Image (cartoon, rainbow, N blue to C red; front, side, top):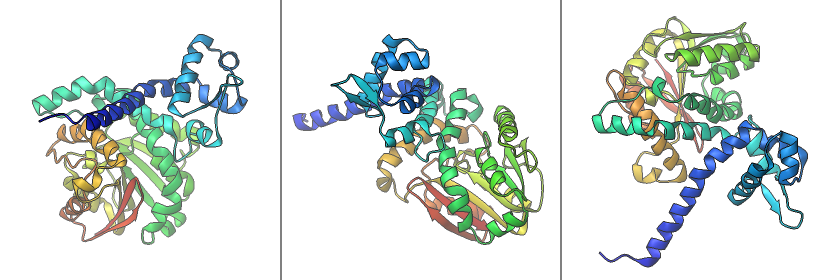
Length: 352
């Protein structure tokens, strides 16, 4: 078939944008790790020489870094003065680690999958999985930095209040298991908000649990928080008022088995809360910028993790509501509802 020049040019433009985004990622990480964004936001307009002096870096590198960031739209450039600056919006998104839109955090996870790409390709070729623990350490840091701002913005203010009677229990003093807690961001946010409740974060990844324990000390929640190494199908304890799964159910090899264990561990009036990435029912509905991120994350991280485990259900990060509901009901839960939906998340509430 003949090639349409206009369509080819449009495809070339798309490639150019993608190439620019891909190669800007490491520069964004450099800006975060060396404190360049924070220094520029604090100092106001600065030349490369002034910013280099302020940050103790080599000016020749910063000339390229600043120009590249201006071309990407993350800083501003004034050709009259030769100075660079940041708008309030840029500073908010590039320097505030508690911001719901903290851009640098996501690029740690992106960096990790580039480092792991050959191993993932081999897994696809052989049909084997690739466990979470087999990824580069940047994935663990990136997951925390990417998800924590959203949890800070929504978990206490919106998601937990959407569950029937849960906040009242937490205020009075409840027992909570946070399963698949990773570095513990979700556990610690809840523990700080509800000091009368007891929280235990569980994750099979030993290094993540050690990190979470350190953060619990730093955040001052050791009095009502503990972290233990365990899988979703074997974590200890009974009579929990609330069990939470944040962005991890779809990574599990046997989510139905995990659900059955949750049911056994809950009080009769307990609640299972599951947070999953936003998705519509059909693939065609998910062919959006958000779906693009989640489908590719699913290919590179989530499905390999599931296929590395027993059963290997492979739900994926874009599992539909109906496929998730099937998992919940197969796990023994009779009351299932979607409590909240945002542009990036779905929050489900299950009861026995």
